[in-house]
Structure formats: structure tokens, C-alpha cells
Length: 297
Ligand code: KIV
Image (cartoon, protein in one colour):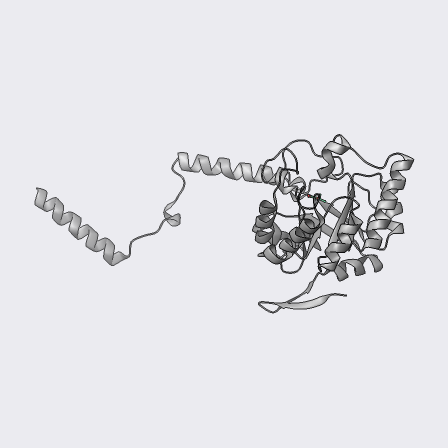
């Protein structure tokens, strides 16, 4: 079920809601999700018809240049979510709760989730791990929650590195239990990251909530990728699940080098790229200059 909203200019498009995301699973339609972190990228994703835009804490690595996602703060996430909010009309806008914003105290966690809705216009939040009681508390506060299990980057130190999860039988059982528990707690979707495709397929068949895979194979209900990986803007080695759809780094780099060369050789700006004086002002200026010259003679 989705609300039809009329946008300025008579553009009638469907607003994606948590309900329409869930309906897509029922209708066996694949769900698309990309990360975005600023006005331009969020606007392009929205206009491309991407169902969900996640302001991921991957922000910390791909935009802010930190070594991991754990350094990202609430203020940074709020700032970037606000920028995306100003761009997004149709897609569902989700804010990723940063490390430390929901790990210490439940009340604080709910307060932080509410801040995302109230202060940045997010329509849902995402949190990592099987925190079922917290999910329920957030739903009580009217904040829809996207779950995230498997390779959860905020658990980097406890996992001992970015490693594929759910490879042994006990690990598969743990993942399945966590997925079912989060499903029952009421998450509106569940990110499955870095797990064998067979495990993701089993979870997807078992839970009501749509599963959104990243490095979890093709049988999830939808897929998410980090935009900067898709565009080759993330520098360094990419995990094998990433498909690069464009080389934007090459395009930007080529444009920057061409600008440098044009400025250095005097080719930029051209006359057409310059402002001109009105004819009368030009004529008056020439008369004054000529008079000054004559006086000096
Ligand atoms: O922060 C992020 O980008 C994410 C997605 C990759 C799921 O959590």
C-alpha cells in the first residue's frame, strides 16, 4: 500500500513508506536501497526511483575519511541526514544510528532515534545487532526500525575484523535466531550483510520482514550498496560483492585536470564565459580614458 503524493509541477509519484516496502515482499518485487550522504547524491538516488535511501554510517569512511565507521558522531549523522532530507521526495529516508548512540542506555537510544525523526526528517532508523527490546521501545516511540545482522561493522573489534559471518552450523543457528527475533520485534526490514547466500536465502524464506542483502547473495528481497563503491569513489580495495556501475573518480579527475590545464594556458575563461560592460558604460569609460590621456600629453 502506498500513498500517492502530488509533487510541485504536477509530477504524481508514489511516496515509498515502510508499508509499501513490506508490500513489495508480499508482491515478490525486489527492493532497491542505496546509501547517500548529501543533497546531490540523495536527489539523484530519489530521482532514479531507488526505494530506500540510507544515510549510512559508512559516511565516516567514504565521506569523512575515518578508518572505520565507529568514529562517526550523532551530530555528523544528523547534519548529513538533514542534507538528504532536503533532496528526497519519493524514497524512504533512513538514518543509520552511529556507534555509541544506542549501546549504553535504552532511554538515550530512544531519545537519539527520536532526534533523527524530529531534527533531521528521517522516516526510520537502522541499528546493528539483535537488540529486540530496543526495537520495541523505538516502535513505542513511533520510530520504524531497520535491523542489521551478519557482518556488522560497528562490531569490528568484537568480530576481530571484517569477516564473513554465519559459516559454521552454530553461527547459522545464531543468525537465524536473531533474524526471527528481530522479525517478531517488528523491524520493517532487515539488512543481511556479509553472510553466505544459502543462509540469507533461508532467513529470507523464514521471516515476514523484507531482507536487504549486502554481500548476502541474490535471494534476499532487496539489495543495498554503498554509493561510493558503486561509483568508484571509495578508494582502496572493494569487497567482492560490490559491483561498480560507473567510474566517477575517473570522470572527476579528468575534469579537474582539464580545468587546471585551461587555467594555466589561458583557455579558461573565454570571452563567452565573461561578463561585459553595457555599450554606453564602455563608451563613457573610453571617453574618460581618452580625456585623461590627452591631459597627460
Ligand atoms: O553504513 C552503511 O552504509 C550500511 C549499509 C552498507 C548497510 O550500514
